[in-house]
Image 1: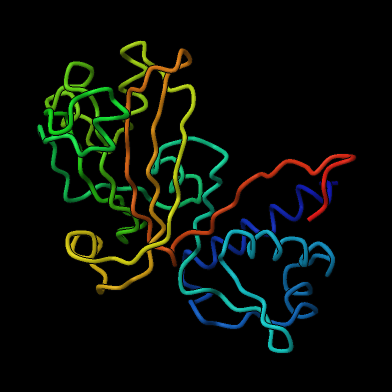
Image 2 (image 1 turned 90 degrees about the horizontal axis):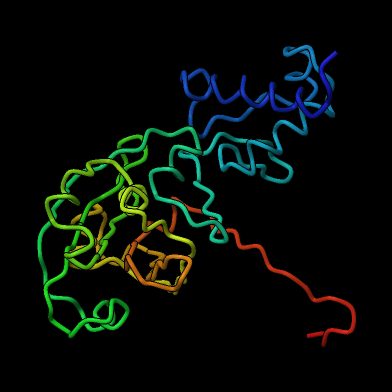
Length: 246
């Protein structure tokens, strides 16, 4: 007999397939728990645990006193304590990751980028600009900057949907850690045009500096994430015993 843990995942997977196939449409209310549990031949507790998984993934939403509804689009969960590429994050949600509007070439380094890469402001660097998609929806506009003697425009251009992290690892420069500055903002100008959203749409912008284990900065990135497409999670430690209480 399958464990309750595996059973809830099995039930959740079945419901995901029904949503993907269109059997459960966005905005549609799920049958009541007793009815759905009877239809699936499972206990209400197992069904409730499975629906909790779908809610965590942003696939359904529970409205108190009304019921559980299929959302119009799943929310991607972005765990900022983990450092991985945008495509990997999108794929981890079971969505098809893609890249459009890609442009790569030499550009003058902005002041913050030049400082991180230990260059003079305005010195040419390799810049890769691209829009990342999830099931064909534009969700992230990103810019990656590298020293041109590390990754040339030609090498960056060959990445396609690939990861800059993988390209750096191939050069024996694996990224060990990244430090990100996170700020809210609104889409305007180029960002709004690239993401095909109205000016003023809410964004979450990450400016990140990635380094090797010895502290050598190899990549600087800026990512503009559509706020309504992502749910951000961060692992926070403490307070431990004796810590000041706020």
